[in-house]
Image (cartoon, rainbow, N blue to C red; front, side, top):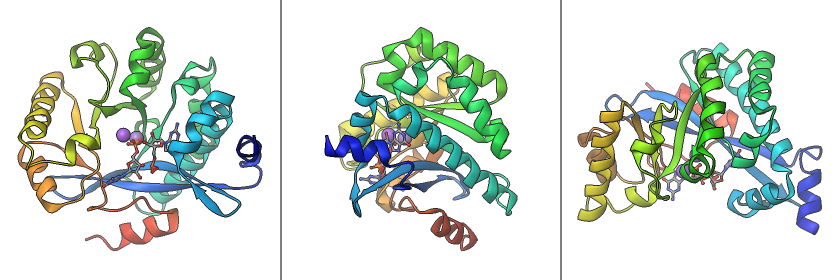
Length: 253
Ligand code: G
Ligand code: G
Ligand code: MN
Ligand code: NA
């Protein structure tokens, strides 16, 4: 209960912050975007999203938290774009509960209007399991957003049981291979085969693939040579607070 109360008060207490993890085009090294990741300090101690996001979902607090994330991230990246990073895109994680809100599309429209971030610069990351939970509803929400130019990515791909053919019903631009498949490439034959198969299928469906959790040069070389377009992971950069991201971007050739 203590944690739930603290979570309830966290927005007004300014206990949340965002970090941004860069995503790069593997062929060129060019930065294409950043993924916003929420951080929470409860009484000065960091609590991992995997610990409080489920609680936020159970209590419905995820709706208010999600609105704060969207508004803050759109503002930060709109500012960065105006400061000379005009191509930068923003990816935001959206949970199933948020997607089910009747005013979800309206909230996205509002965040874009208030910050001036172009719709085409925003992409929503939705996990494979959320997509599968209610594909009809998700399709209708993503169709509305897609008509405005907002993109979508399938997050944590490979951790559920969906087929790409099924997900093809959705207006999705990117598929993010879960980092559990990236961890042991190129050494593990099975995982390497799975990653190559996902890349081949994605090409057939016109989806670009983002590999998560790249930590070594060997993983990055394998992914690049296998035709994976985009990469994200500690090797490229850890998630960074806005000021550190700004410095990181400025230091790149
Ligand atoms: O950095 P990492 O521990 O930050 O994040 C763990 C998981 O928490 C991510 O895989 C993501 O699914 C979830 N997460 C991070 N930030 C957000 C957010 O702003 N909203 C939602 N719904 N989930 C998030
Ligand atoms: O939403 P998603 O599951 O994609 O969130 C990304 C999660 O992965 C965050 O918790 C982020 O901190 C974490 N992460 C990002 N890069 C790496 C990495 O290279 N290795 C590991 N182990 N985790 C990473
Ligand atoms: Mn994500
Ligand atoms: Na993920």
